Amino acid sequence: DTLKKVEYELHPSFYNPLRAVENPKGGFPLDIWTWGEFDITVTFYYKDGSVSDSVFSLAYSDELPASDKAYIDITPDSLKRAL
Image (cartoon, rainbow, N blue to C red; front, side, top):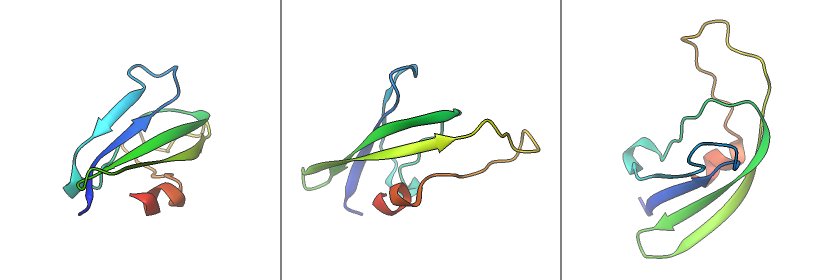
């Protein structure tokens, strides 16, 4: 548990494109509904005061789940490993 906060910088077309998540027990998730391809910058804030960031490319298609209650996690493995 070395992370304190994770900040996601989304595409500028998003409302409130800079989003911070401070939920260490939940794995610092960010839930958004989107499609298209864009890069996000993820900044990691550690409890010791250090900071690092990484850029991740996200690519979502226009294919929707068969049910509106279905959820598909297509988070890139590189981002999952970073968290």
